[in-house]
Amino acid sequence: MNRPLAYTPSTPLGRKLCSYMVLTDEERNFLSELERNVTKLPARADLLQQGERYGTVRVMRDGWAIRHKALPDGRRQVVNFVLPGDIIGFYCNLFETADHGVTTLTSVEVASFAPDRIFELFKRFPRLAAALAWSGAKEEAIIAERLLSVGRRTALERTAHLIVELLKRLSLVGLADGGRFILPVTQEILADALGLSIVHINRTLRRLRDIGLIEVAGQQITVNDDKQLSSVGQFDELYLHLIRAPKRLEHALDQAPDRSRAMP
Amino acid sequence: MNRPLAYTPSTPLGRKLCSYMVLTDEERNFLSELERNVTKLPARADLLQQGERYGTVRVMRDGWAIRHKALPDGRRQVVNFVLPGDIIGFYCNLFETADHGVTTLTSVEVASFAPDRIFELFKRFPRLAAALAWSGAKEEAIIAERLLSVGRRTALERTAHLIVELLKRLSLVGLADGGRFILPVTQEILADALGLSIVHINRTLRRLRDIGLIEVAGQQITVNDDKQLSSVGQFDELYLHLIRAPKRLEHALDQAPDRSRAMP
DNA sequence: AACCATCTATAACATAGGTTAAGGGGAGAG
DNA sequence: CTCTCCCCTTAACCTATGTTATAGATGGTT
Image 1 (cartoon, helix red, strand yellow):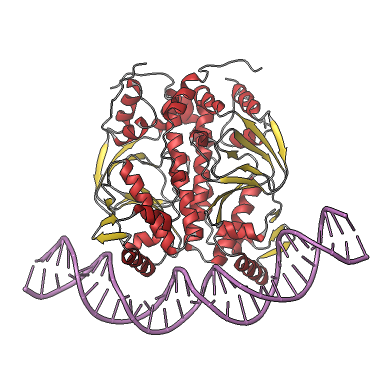
Image 2 (image 1 turned 180 degrees about the vertical axis):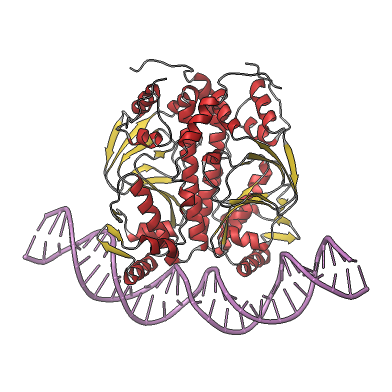
């Protein structure tokens, strides 16, 4: 195995996995092959419709999208925000039909590849498989935290919490600068993400502005006092699992027996 | 590879994975090795405490538990119910600390093994790795559906929905019989799972009883009219992904190239 | 058999957040 | 330039759900 020390792939997915462990040439090649087939789409396009049969796996390369679920009567819950490097329909190609939709918020660039590549990945690149599984677990942790928000935090707390979460996630990929970031989202979508009505989101944002914790100018949000905003939102970054565990992951994988051994 | 046709392992985890695909002898041996080290615990024991460092991976063999997250002031959200065959702290051994707790509801039997075994599994048994990843994705789907419930369904809908969900999940593992099952859960826990107050859960259950949709006798719940209860809860079993995709999973894995190939 | 702790049940009251309604601003289209 | 559409904003009012309080079941313990 051959490991360049400070290599940073140009692909968002590669970059993401790089933060977990050092990739070999072979692994990087495989990943960039996955991201080769790129498509551009405008804002408000459906990448996946609830009830649709899964066809391809996609990687978000640039732009924002939301993952959402709807009830028959139109009520809708935004489950998560899809940011660059995130995968759409990863394991899910095994499911019969999609139980959620994915819709772009901005114009986006996505790469698509055949679901079979996932299995190939599991067979040929166990380290990548483990890393992807790990990032899937992180996504689940984010959803669980949102469930805690919607179930048990007040409107003000929830809203503060989401803003801090997005700030942290975006900072991590260089999309936020000094507490300032672009939130390409209507208040309706914010409401659907937080389980609130659009009117109440408006009230709540105004309250946060009045207290002086945030400033809003169009889609740009400025967090004035992230310390205090975190405390309003009861934000504990434990769940984001930002602490990369590269050494543990690498070591463990490299030391695990590669081939069969007898049972004791 | 040697594949007995109708073999059913005695271990809950093995049984679960068996429902996705036919296991080889080697795979079954490995799994049963994982479940060898069994411990018994009483009800209301913490299998994992929020904030704790992960030590071992566990498989629930028998009994119920809940996965829950708490806020500093004590408000709590139950994220999911842990049933036999479910894994506790799977990928998560890579995280620094647990962002949730796991507490038993009944006396339980759990198997424990070292986190390293997970990596071994990824390297030696890609098919098992894919199957576990798939079941992880199903768990995520259940949490996302609960988020939809808590965010957008009314108390009555949520409660109905949860009862139907548990009925379906338990039926699948033979723990429900003719719409009747044991729910080893206080109303407080139900409230924490649904983002409601304990008083309101009580009101809501009474309403469901008054309408005649369910009957409650101690911990035993009887669903009288699951068709109507499903419709009250806007239940769409899409998200449970009950349709096993064994052929797709097996085929895909068996046909994926096993070793390196040149880039085009 | 009496005690204690834990649950369930219900009533009375309080409020966070939903709903409806109406006006205003900005940006793209003609 | 102004029309239109979409989004934001705010006010007034309403209701689903939370809170507090109390009593009754239930079941294990001494």
